[in-house]
Length: 124
Image (tube, rainbow, N blue to C red; front, side, top):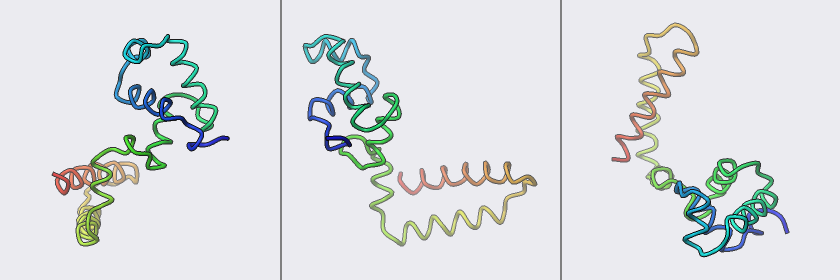
């Protein structure tokens, strides 16, 4: 079996610990196994999900909405009301019109910065 469903609860536990920044040796110590066992579980997860490394694996799990891998701010934004999302979109459009920049790249970067700030304010 391939795919996220092929991951065992232990695989997910190891991956969550890695996602939280725990070094592989520390994961092994905490779980009472060898580092090679941790590496073996990660290789199994990479193969099952067609990912290349831990960052790619974690991003894949987050995109799939696997519990424990979706950032809380993202979950909160997705769960917000349509009114809130519409308000954010209106603010973004207003900022795009006000943008004093000339190049498309500068404009895009400006809008992204404004969007990040607005989403942060909406979620705070």
